[in-house]
Length: 112
Image (cartoon, rainbow, N blue to C red; front, side, top):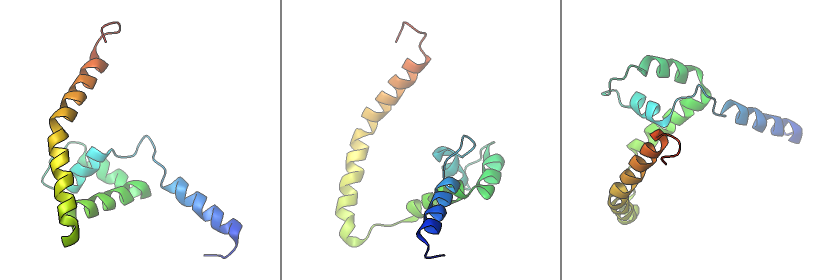
C-alpha cells in the first residue's frame, strides 16, 4: 500500500464500492440459510454461487458465522443474559407488530 494520501483515498473508495450492496446480493435470511447446512432451500445453489463471486456477501456470511459461533466472555455473561431476557420479552410484541405491518401492506388501498 502506498503512503500517498490520494492513493489511500482511492483504495478506500474502491473498497467501499466492492462492499456496496446490490439488488443481487443475498438477504440476511438467505445467508443464514446458507450458513445452516441442515436447512434445505431451493435458493441455496443460487445464493451459494452469488456469495462465491461477491466480496460483500462473502464478508457478510463470514461475519454471520462468526457472530453465531461466538461465546460471551465470563464477564459478559450477565449482560448477555439480560439482553436475551429483554429480547424474549419483546418477541410477542415484535411479532404482533410484524403481522400487523404485513397485513397493512396486503390490504387494498383505502382499507389501511
